Image (cartoon, rainbow, N blue to C red; front, side, top):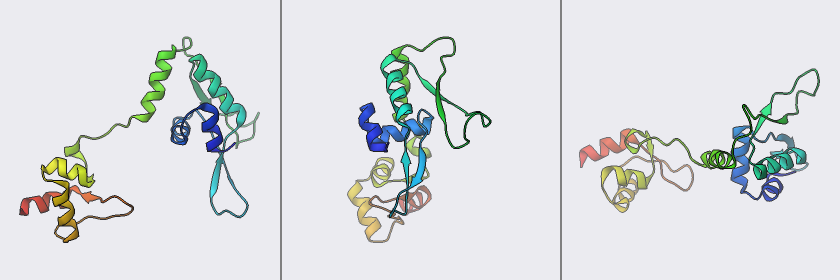
Length: 161
């Protein structure tokens, strides 16, 4: 089962499937597809259906490490782990919602900034910062679509203003 199919079955986004995988709620197998150079994640349909039932019932799944003598080393299995009983549905929903939140650093402690963050930190308009980057007065890189500014470079540039 592909990530997209698993997302449709669970009624969540593909990004949520990635978060479930990172938290250990799902364990994909990575396999190469014919004619494609990339490895694609394949999810066990039984495991996805079990997670769906657990989400509906309000219980939480934890991956148990497979016993190497009983099962192949490449497979993982989902086991219920209700320590002291199953958590309430509200707790489970809060735990799933917590997956979306990241422990973000305060803006003044970040070492790398986007244009909007640099504007917020300096109090200058984003347009002014963009112009400084294009005029090569402020160092910045653009590995994708967004600009990345090192905090040190921003501080040096701002001190020269």
